[in-house]
Image (cartoon, rainbow, N blue to C red; front, side):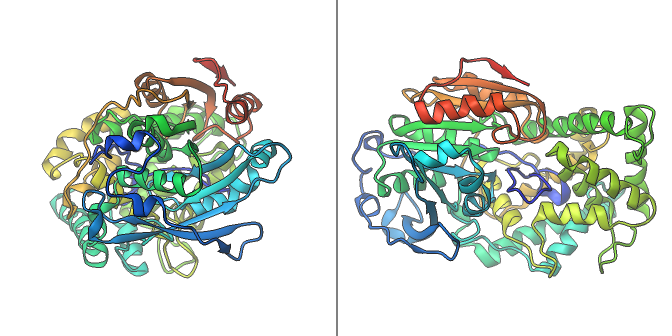
Length: 509
């Protein structure tokens, strides 16, 4: 995620109030073997042959439609789910290659919002010239039967809950918040919760591929979108076309390992921010060294834990909201000046800057309404992997390891990883290697100081995929394509336009 209104890419789940950056993995049911050829999987021909009715969707240059998919792929006669789709046709010149599906991650990020707000306008012109740019909001997300959990006021309260509990009473308050969140999801969206896994969404993508008339699926997925793309390739290797997986996740990891890795990733990102900050004359964390900067930030969090500060809103800036604000700015170094200003304000008892960053992360509108990003995020994550922890005692035992990974964020991230322990639907996925044997070359892109999807995950996914090739960006921020590196963009554009992947191990700065 970035704090600019360029569209964000997400890796969400552990972190503030249990919903900032938890990665996922899944297995679930596999399609019939016939799905790897050209015929529809058994029992699904009605879905694979439905007709799309495109219409103007009120955004210049874009068309919209809906498609149906079985709510339960194992029981396709048990009812449908309606999914929203949008596209912008290839502009030319040059021969049209096909459709290019895009997904910004999450889980919970709106692919249609990403398409209309950025990808179909901001991707390199040669790519947009030769591809129809297409997005489908995943099931449970945004326009596709969205998962709902809490009201705006309830979500405000949830985001302010102390996630670094100091005593048993605070532990009970935090676990009660997780329980209330899960109960709200079950009450408002219980019928769909068992059917929003990554495997289900990958299968939806194959239905859409067929309806678009494409023999192969071409795809760019960022952050969690890499897991979705890798899952598609694993299920349908013969139908995988040119796949770019940017800011990759490692499907072989358990939830606790993934969350701890991300904790270390955000620590690394903070160290990069701090190293830059102490060189600036306006650094609110001091101008000496990164260790002192970390100490100053921890002290700010401690002070806010004891006494939240005004924001100019009816909400005060709590430790949890401040942590979210800092984390939000770690996704993109372009947000570092904004973070310095927000931290300086907090030191003057003005919490508005950090609150604004936190609200951007949560997709909270000024009227107090939240997008369903965080609700869908929990629904998918808690279905894709068994919980990181089964209760508070397990968290307490793990806190030292998390604090070793990040002295600044570790304790809060450990407790935030408890959220899926109270989920009403049992996980259907498990950690597993994803090999996609028989797939065409797949480009995995990793950024060396990526906070949300640590670089070693990209290395791991590229190694697991039988046709994976690793492209490395040596730098800061979350994901690499379209973020200013001509070397990265040229390599990916060449692959998308010509089908030629970069040399495995290629590095860009």
